Length: 189
Image (tube, rainbow, N blue to C red):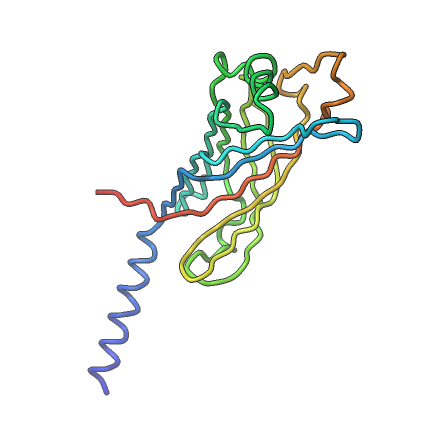
């Protein structure tokens, strides 16, 4: 009986140590999309990017994203060209980034299946302009897989993105950004 207790305690300690050592998670396949449709938009003013990178460091509550602007795909090639050349100016500002923290990381147990609401705040940089952003994200842990989703809105003018008067009724002043990621343990050697 004493031997079983010692083995059980050793297992619990090693499991806790192993779980604590797993503090960084990463993805290169994050999905970021935006929707800037209006009721009078004849075409969909939306795009998807499935190449976002993200790093989550549980030990520091740090959360980072990077998105290449030219990796956004539109339904129409001409709209994608206008986005990269005239609005996002992708050659001049090749990526958008987010660097922030999860304010309530202590309430999120990435080792246990469940759904957890995270309070996220940080700095979002688009078009060379950095602004403070606060939002919530839903983390879902299922069978050891960690995924997260978030939706938030940004005003295009806040990031220096000007909409010409000719098309201002066809492009929303406020875009909805949706983020969806599935993390893997970052392996360091």
